[in-house]
Amino acid sequence: MAFLSVMPNLYVSDVERAAGFYRELLGGTEIFRLPAEGPAKHVELRVGAVMIALSAATEVAEQGLPTPTPGHPLELVVWCDSAQEAIEGLRAAGVPILVEPYSHVSGTSRGYVTDPDGNWIAVVSKTTA
Image 1 (cartoon, one colour):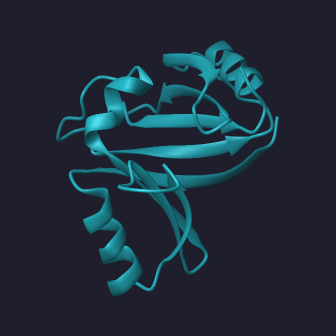
Image 2 (cartoon, rainbow, N blue to C red):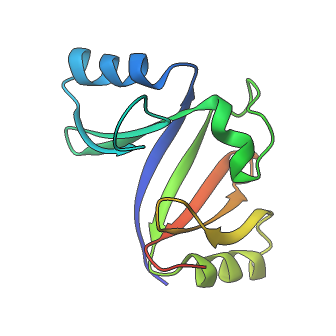
């Protein structure tokens, strides 16, 4: 199983304001927005060689996760060939599984695990769950 990249996903109170900060103050280029029209619930930007995502904190419950607390202000998004296979491999290694892979509204397959400190990691692939 090859993991392809890591993208921090910051939970924010105002996606448009945060996206403006990263675009206007840090020179970010917006590459994805959900929904495509109107107020964003999720925006992805490239800042130099790094991708960063901004998601509305109010949308977290829809992903099957608990409400973010000060100890969970972000998640790491790790892209892979198959979220299902990756979650199975991580489970076999004893990694705690928060959410089993499912078909996400973005057209991807996504599951959630935690690192040893309890930080959330979204395991995402272009294939569906």
